Each structure stands twice: as C-alpha cells, then as structure tokens.
Length: 386
Image (cartoon, rainbow, N blue to C red):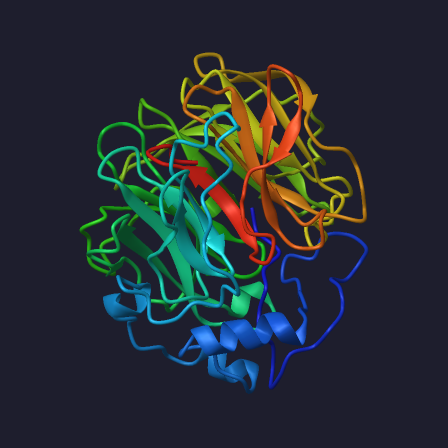
C-alpha cells in the first residue's frame, strides 16, 4: 500500500503533518528539516525546485548508486553494538533501513551498512542472501512525483544492481518464494493517482526487462507477499464511490496472458484497508497493518494484527491485535521470524523508530534493535521475504 514516507519537498523542507479527512491518493507528507537534511546529504539525486523537475526525463540510475561495501558515509551517531543475547531469535540476522541506510544486524557481529543512504523497505530473498529495496532519485511533494529505482544487493555488500530506471514511482519490493527468486515490486501512478501495477523481474535483469503481471484495467492492484506456489497476495482498491473500497486476492501471474485471481475472504470490511502485510513462512498466518480511519495519509491510527490464513481456500480468520490504537505513535511494517514465534516491526513510541519483537507465546513485546539514536524501519529476517 502507498506508504507515508520521509521526503524533501519543493525548494526546501517544511514541518507539519499529513492532511486529514478522507484518503487522498496523491497525498502530501511533510517532514522535519533534520530528516530532509539527512536525505539531502545521502542522495545526489534529491533535488530542490519545482514539481516540473521531478517529472522531467531522468537518466537511468547506475547500479553504483544502489550502494556497495564500504559504504561511503554513515549518519549513525554511535558505534554499532551487538543485539541483546537474552532475546529469542537474535542469533538470526535481520535487515532494516537504519537512518535510511540498509543495515545488516545480528547478535555477536558488527553491524554492516550496504547502501549509501536514502534507501527504504529492504526485503531479504528466500535464497541467495540478497536484499531488494527502493532508492529515490527525486522526492516530490507528493508520492506520485517521486522517482525511485528498485535495487538489489548481496548481504555482503557486493554486486549492487539497479533493476529499474528510476523514471517511475517504484516501491515496496519483495521476493517470490517459488524457487524462481524474482523480485516483486509495485509501480504507482502511471495512469494517475488511483493506479498501481505489479511487476516481476530477475535480480540479474536489466532495467526495462520487468514484466507486468497485474491487470491495468483493474486500476489499483498492490502486491504484499509471494507464496511458494508462485501466487501473490494482493489488494485491489477502487475509489469510484468517493472512498477507498478494498478487496484482496491471490494473483496467479501469467506474463503475456490473463492473470488468475482467487478472492480472499477477509475478517474486515471492504472499507478497511491493509497498509502492509506479510505472509508467514509456513503460509498459515499473516501479519498486517490495519488502517483505522480510511485515510492512508495518516499512520498513527493503524493497529498491527496477526491472523490465521488458509492458502488453499483463501480465508483469513481469527485476527489478534499485537498493538493498540494510540494516536501518539506509529507502529508499522510487521514481518515474521523463521519459526513464527515472533513478529518484528518498527514503532516510534519511544520518540525514534526502533524495531520491536512481539512474542506470540507469551504476548510480550520487547525492544529488538540496539541503538536508541538510530531510526530502524522495515525490519526483516534473513532468507524470509516479506
């Protein structure tokens, strides 16, 4: 789902909050001067100026802009520390966007930064130890004006590769789980602010080799997670009634043909929206962000849940909340541990985004990240695509 994002806007940064009221597809999000300064330092392609600059033709982004070891700089204000050893699952490595650099984290090992900066939403491949994320070249005042490239890099910082040109608003990548090891990503607003399309591309592919797998005539279709049989868990949203109305499907890609759609039975109404969703490794559960007010600009009204999922019948049932409705904070981006004993997510409840772990057995939540001066967002465990 279209995300609230930190951004540079116009000729300088502006402070404030997102607009209220009903959902506006071409929304404007404003950020503090500090956040924009960090992004400006980290992005050669983040320009000030008019919206026309963002809509101008953009040269294809070179793969070198995706990152690589050693990282050229870091915005992190204190040395990396090892994760606390008394927490379940901390021996597994996990990736996050740490102050907008992609970081590899884990107990007993030094933190590794593999991207230059200004990078969002890392997702770990099922095999091959690769990470996919998106890198903005231009940040407009509205998300449909952003120009992003989908990047892939190996977790050791080698072979950075730009998979898309950076001429479109490409975002929220994840991976297939069917053995093909392809990247699934979303492309927003090609046909206006109420459109979104889903693409597949090989991690060795060249920009322009991406394959459309959704149906443009359906308007807005957004990919969340892949399944082992090759299907993709998606949402379809329609605004013809004046408000967002959502349905969910398991999409069977048929490049060059007509994709298959199996509608999912949801435990929520059609006017309630999933803003992020992760299918568990066993594909018997999902974790998701449930929008609280139908306004996808705001994030503090979201509540995180997990629920049972039957991939054969397409039924989602028995939802359990793991966070509470609290307008003073944001909790977002849930993903699973390998044994499904834990859901990790990020939240700014402490005043800065940290990664938290919810234990399904005892219903306890603990801080999972280890540096309280660094924003850790969009966490995911090694070899576990979102």
